[in-house]
Image (cartoon, rainbow, N blue to C red; front, side, top):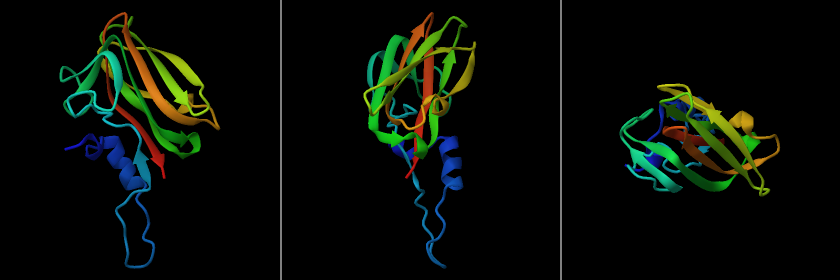
Length: 167
């Protein structure tokens, strides 16, 4: 099964919420008006297919959902995708896990005008936390990629990376 077919619980809820209305009486479509832009965001292929990376690996040691997550210790992952205007983004974020309060990650969001924004993320201890990236995207910007530089101060895990756009 491909990662595109494996939907997180959050994506399944969005699918129901944004299900298209019938176009005419007696007709109905199950095709939702959204698209997931991040490939293999849950790492359920068991590897880092779709991602550029260094010192990172898919692991089944910890996961937020499914079987796999990405393990980072002084490494990084990055993925680019087709441009998405902020106004079309429904959800944009990921889950992270750290084992020490000294663990940190650097989140980078890339934009179509060749600019980027970086954010320092402090981790809680032994708990999965959701990082909501949508509020970090300036109005009027088009998102084209995401990168996590992680594991300074100790290892971190990431899972369920998602950017769902309303198209």
